[in-house]
Image (cartoon, rainbow, N blue to C red; front, side):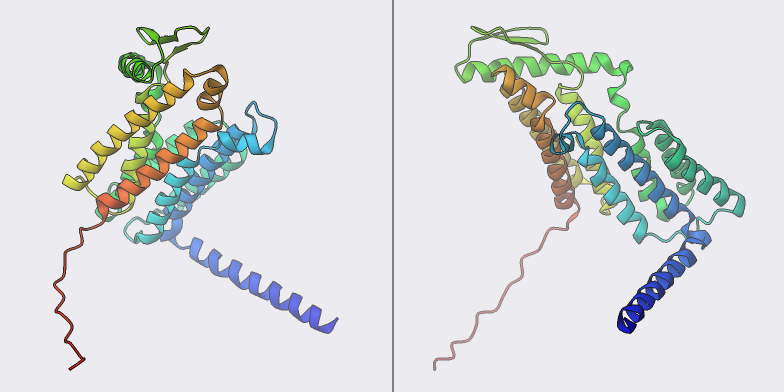
Length: 307
């Protein structure tokens, strides 16, 4: 019993020291903005898990298909970037710190799970403040990108989606014909001959929606990894655009195969698989774009030791 009590006391002391250590770090003025960035990350992660939890499927495994892992990856890069930066030149006053922490606490506790507007406002406010410090521009840009990445999905850009959707329909029509599936296309609607299935490529299924999400993620990954606008980042960005078009066309072709295939690739696990693949590809391309090219090194031949 004495050993058990001693272990418990040591554990309590260790946890107490750890809590005291982190509290001393958080109390520093330079830690105000990193704490607010972490709060924004928690808000967005909470939102995507809440959306998945309240989705149509009843099983826990099915609900995971609705989790937006790309958002989580973006915030992982942003938080990691914030941990590497020096905030000594962005120390807010006491009133600003109290208002920021009160806002973050209210957003985490009092705001509905599906509210994204509060996160957008917080990210933009922090981004504008950090933009005043040159060394914090990368984090400012990332916060602005993560808050504005859903802009092109709003109604004012509906005409853009209709235009891209018509391009998608023509290429999917061509791919189906090459595969031996007779089909007809009218605007954004595809009909496979001999079936009752007609697929309309609307906002959300067109490649413009995928590009909007993936290209914002690529930009965040690139900036958070130390990249800038340069020939490598542009070339890898163009490659990403071409690959997203190709993968979404393949997805649309599969949606035209049957009703079961349509459901799987439209709102089921197929959509989640493709979204996760987009995230991994964007992250990999960002790493390639920001990694300096290795130069070849001449190695002198090894002397023959047999003599």
